[in-house]
Amino acid sequence: MVQTDFGGTEVVSPQDVPEPVCGPRDVVVEVAYCGLNRLDLLQRKGPGLIPGFRLPHVPGMDFAGTVVATGSAVGSVVPGDRVIADPTQGCGSCPRCAVGDRAYCVRPRILGGNAPGALAEYVLASAESVVQVPESLPLAAAVTLPTAFATAWHAVHTVGSLSAGETLVVHGGASAVSLAAIALAKRAGASVVAFAGSDEKRAAARAAGADLVLRNGEPDAVKTVSIFTDGAGADLVLDHVGTDTWRTSLDCLGIRGRLLLMGNTSGDQVSFSLQEVFHRGLKLLGTGGYTSADFVAATSACFADRLHLPTAARFPLEDLADAWDVLGARDTIGKVVIEP
Image 1 (cartoon, rainbow, N blue to C red):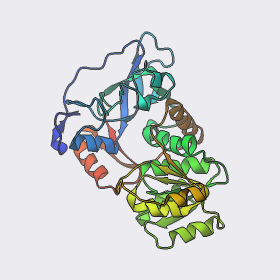
Image 2 (image 1 turned 45 degrees about the horizontal axis):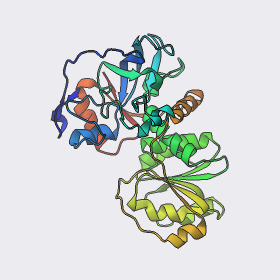
Image 3 (image 1 turned 60 degrees about the horizontal axis):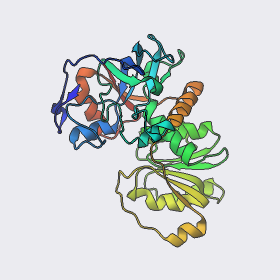
Image 4 (image 1 turned 30 degrees about the vertical axis):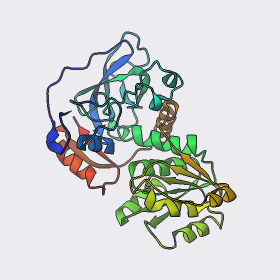
């Protein structure tokens, strides 16, 4: 599926393009499933958000499939291996890439972001970015892992340093990254409080492992969290909503609590008391982009415990427009998946 302009679904259409060719350190993967992300939708509407984006463009960041060709210097995988990949490829040679911090590469290369993605029969990826999927995990489940679980792992573990026995509060509890964060937090031995808007979304947060699930905007939410934590307050709050949840996030935190700032879907500007933050010893932490080590750690944890997100809907490639409508409605639970 090739995007040739900015706008509605009409700007993306099926086209025949040359099959990708391996460089020495690349692999070509036959795509079995491609999971949609909101970036695909935003960049279709325009403008391009990833530096280096240009038209024509093949979207699709998350994929699972089978290796069909490898470069001359690749020894980590062979044709026939079932794989997923970190869509954040980097350039492979700058100082950031050298330490595995590909999200801040000086010449970023992101599959489906500014490089040809996986809404296609074949996709080209660096061999360094792919991990083999165990036979025990279906590719249809593996495709839900890459971006959501790597992002959640980076936030909860690498930045948030969540420990067993602590309490994590999660907003937008049925979003892909929140469901992943809930599952990872429970795996680590933490307690989880989740906020969600509908009965269906609250049920999804419970199914992911949340111990306490509250309605968005619940008037006594802070008091309820305090009671749940025996008056201590939450150790960690994960907030990718922004302005609408800012006050609740701060008020739910206990002494020396950590607020993980991940997004701003409801607005970008907030105000707060500096005195409140420094007297309570709070930490306001921007999560930023995950690393290659986060990707490996997250996927390894998912493979070990068979963690994955639910599939909200599945469409053939030619019905991509319908899939985008489902994604854009914002009432999905889990990943919308395309089968090329």
